[in-house]
Amino acid sequence: MIIFSSAIAGSNRSLLEDAVVKLAKRNGKRIVIVNFIDEMIESAKSLNKYLNAANLPNLDIKTLELLKTTAFHRITDKIKEDKNVDYIIDGHMAFWWKSGPINLLNVNDFKELEPDFFISVLSAPDQVLKTLKAKSEWTNKDIDSYEIAIWSELELYTTDLISDTLGSKNYLISANEDPRTLYDLLYAAHKPKVYLSYSMEHRDTDYKQLDAFTEKLRKHSIIFNPRTIDIAAYHTTEDEKLKDLVFNQTVRRDYHLIDQSDLVVIHMSTLVYSSGVDSERMHAHTNGKTVLLYFPFQRYSPFTPYFVDKMYKEESQIIRDIENLAKRNAIKRKASR
Image (cartoon, rainbow, N blue to C red; front, side, top):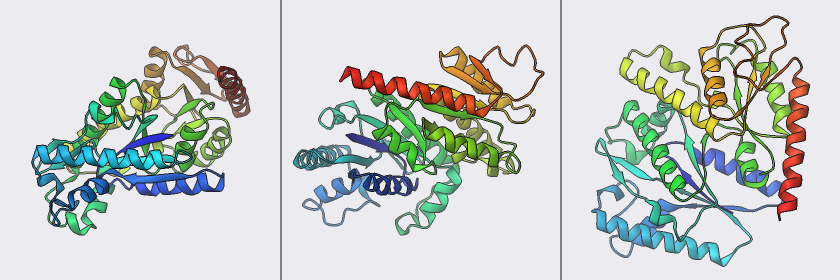
């Protein structure tokens, strides 16, 4: 199994991936992480001993092309040496350099590597900026949260284009997501992929119930949880331009999470209006996704079930149905081998 992991600098994807490596080891599996930029720099040592991650984007395009081609050859040679190992290849689709993008990777670059799927690891712009400013190589770089937000979307957009062209999948995943989500993408393909939809306003009341439900659901499904990227800080920012950008990206991000899922499970434990939940279930329903709604109330509007495939009064009923779906998927996968 080969995964290509796309993320911008400062995304802290190593926290997620290192946790997955440890989880795999506990389950008798081995994952090796290879850093594509490190491989480019290693390839460049014979050309220029002064090259490093901080000044690599200063190179001309032809030199970058040579280094990335050499790096891909080095990586594929490593993979061929030991086929009993799964690999996560960390890289960037583009650099954000001097207030603009520098394209790094394209479709042709992946013809030799042939990843089984891609992941785009995402962190909130303020978290990325804090991480970058703590690194010595970024101390004198002029970059702000707005540019980081644009770079993040550029990285995701480019990875989507490449993966679609290759007939592969690109899974958007938060750097703060539970590592079991990525682990299950690797090793539990029979589990249905579930996007959790709920009101973000219940930070102090319903999260305990939701978290308990999520833990039970995770046994039988691969969960994408939008709460793992919290944008609460941007509600009070004085930078309206940044706020508008992050808010718009949040909608597109959640739609991407829905599009990469098989099911949307709405957890509505209290009767509080949520424009996000309404928008998400309409997007899912009108794009062919199965929408399941936990709604433990007697009275409801005619509009409540309209964009829903099935309503449940008990959480256990949803878990049972998804467990049965996972079992059917496992049987089908076994029969197709």
